[in-house]
Length: 91
Image 1: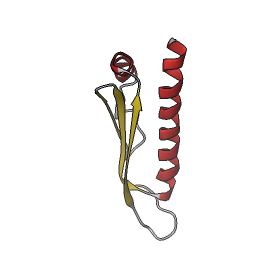
Image 2 (image 1 turned 120 degrees about the vertical axis):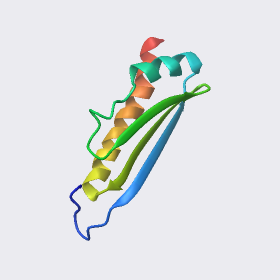
Image 3 (image 1 turned 90 degrees about the horizontal axis):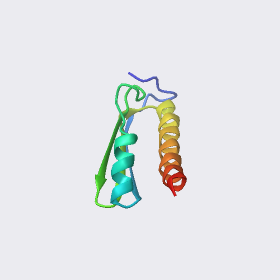
Image 4 (image 1 turned 60 degrees about the vertical axis):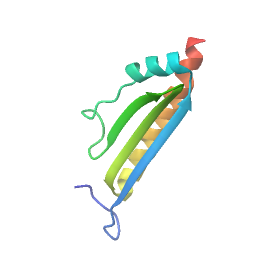
């Protein structure tokens, strides 16, 4: 169980990131950036999939503590950076 600062409140968080990349690039990045829950921070679940021309990532933390929110922000920031920079590097 995660440590909680203050009042001991846990909240469930789900973040969905949808990025339009075109089907070919979305499929390639989906395979290249396939998350594994083994390396995900404890308590987090990362899933990716392709929906048409979009690469979609879902990051969930069913019992996030205050400290976990910082980890969540870091994960989302890293994913956004990868999804922004990799297709531009391929051009």
